[in-house]
Image 1 (cartoon, rainbow, N blue to C red):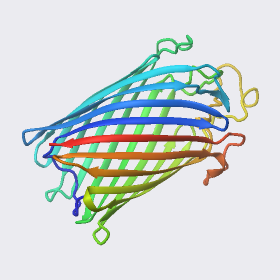
Image 2 (image 1 turned 90 degrees about the vertical axis):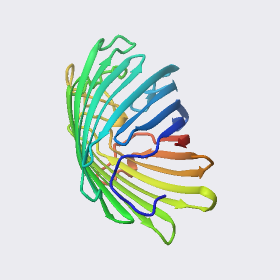
Image 3 (image 1 turned 60 degrees about the vertical axis):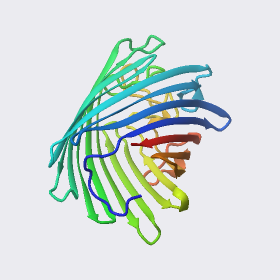
Image 4 (image 1 turned 180 degrees about the horizontal axis):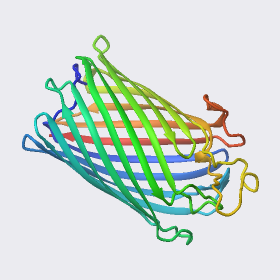
Length: 348
């Protein structure tokens, strides 16, 4: 945990990290999805001005996802996802350029994309301006035969600044704009028909303050997102990273999320709210109005010869009554999830 804070500069150490994620979610009286996901990440500096980084993850998913409203599919499902990405960064003194590519494959879904980012540094390295763009092409082939060989294409733009305010504090603020067109409906939910275009605008700000007296760092975050589907979401985050003797760290965290419903979300499901063939309609509760709380903790330990280990545990609870900027969608059951993540890291 560094005492001073500064904007990003070229890393002088490599990183190899092994990760494992265990996830499970449920509703009252019903177990839903479980996910097991091993992953690998590496960052390797090459000389003084090149950095190559990338990772790969394999998700094994099983359970029963909801068809609509609070009704589960009733059938056991199994799916998997394999995803990987790579990014190359070249540092030129006062700026850096990154290019990357990524791919994610499931039984019924293939996503491919590329990205480019430019970072501009101030002379004292206390400020970094970031400009980036990413493009994605998705292919959907639902196993039930609905929407065969459908596609979705999108572009995402980001502009932001990271500023070291003092030796102990740093702030980051980004604007992200997403625009896409193609197939956005859920082929596994009856009558689900969503718009063929989507735009989102998100503002994200993070602030870190190191507290020397406690040898700890306060982390604050806020995100505001506007969605052309008609939904607006707010996210508030706070965490306290506490250094402890003998190389231990303890980081409790809390996150509150709230969103309004999409314009075409109706509850209860059909026939109420269904306007007939071709009308925009969804009973997917992920598009409903609700609030959600995530509480978690990270326990970390520095080992020997550049090795460290961290265990993260989080609990998530979603409830329509927790919507604070609007009325929550009625009749939705609470939704809960928990996940554990283990990271083993080597710095070299």
